[in-house]
Image (cartoon, rainbow, N blue to C red; front, side, top):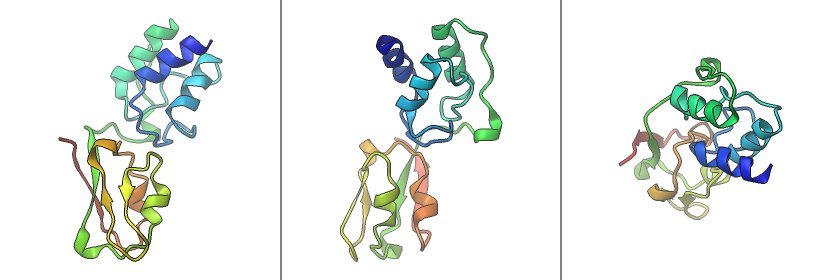
Length: 135
């Protein structure tokens, strides 16, 4: 079972966004391996991701469930430095620790670590986080 979970997890986009209804990609992979979740729960993986998961599990392919969110090209967060008040709410919301900074100081996103999950955007009280296409 562990090998199957690993293989499923490797097929997932690792955004850790929670749009699948689980606390991240690994818990979603575990639920699929146990037959507790379908292959269609991951908007970041899109239809291609759902097909790959279905192939691995040898189940019928389904398009991803569009009620969970939109499939988008890879993106990363960017802090608009002039507007950042240093509240740390974005740091607390980031599931992959891609935002650094101290209280009452400007924060920044470590782009190679950012998965584009968007969880920092609603956490920001001054709307100083934008999403841009990943390089």
